[in-house]
Amino acid sequence: MIHEFEQRLVNVLGVNLSAPFNGNVIRAEGTPDTSTDPKMSVGVLQVEPLLQEMGGKRTEIVPGSDDFRQVLRLECVVGFSFFPNLTGGRAQALAGVEDTLYQLDHPEFKNGKQLIDPAVTDPGFLIRSMEINTSSIKLSEVITGTPRAELSATAKGLFWPVNAAGETGVAITEARVRGVNLSIKFTPAAPEVIAGGADVVLTVHVSATGPMRISDNPGALPFGSLVLKLFGPGNQPGQGTLTGGTAGVDNSRVVDLIDNQAKITYSPPAQPTREFLFIALDDGENGSGAQIGRFELNVRGV
Image: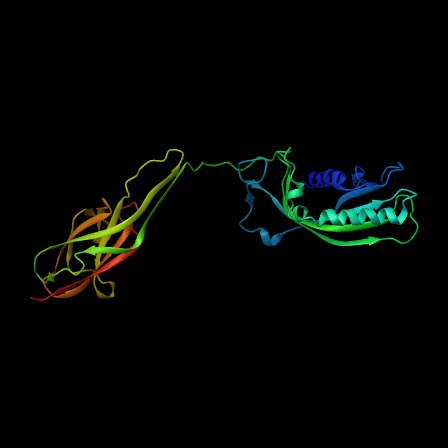
């Protein structure tokens, strides 16, 4: 995780920096080697969990696996130390700081894209942001094994063990989506309903969307059914009677939607009243799902 992150920084900066630090970037392992070449060492100085991003977001799809993996959300402070050679001194260290600052300020370094290696399937980290913090350049004479200049940056991202197994479960092979376009129309729009009179056939017109099947084997599906139910004022049970379709839950009727139409027959009660026909999508268990409309029925006396 962090080791892979450090090594990728070493590789990228080792290529991108200009001479004399080009090719002379190493991971921080204590005192640099005793060669006469200048060196820049890279190492993570501090690690903190990003607690505000924990909670329910405990797994992620990250490079290396198509399954969700447990990841650490971390903020890492990275240190960059510059060791000039004996003749380069402060000027050489300053040149390294300037060049590194310029590289770290590139937009694709700041958003982490520069650290993505297309040749590595499972990198162990995914940096989402990187910002420069501070830098310091010493004026005193260089002492062997002591950096002449330093700077730091803060990286935030996801970290996980390379080749860690992802979560497995039942694969979702199909999703079905069903909906309607409002508003809904009725015919007749203003039916003549007489108390104790003749039955009235009502037609519900719905501009249906779907159902859509999202799967590897798409195909046509029947839309399904609408659920119709009568209510009186104050959501009291209706006094009239509905027939047609099949019996649903709680005195409702389940009617198939065919060619964007559903027909129901309303038998008015013996006394004048005002009722409402509620229309809903079926819930798959002969009950009401999402309500999509209602129609007022005024039953008048003779």
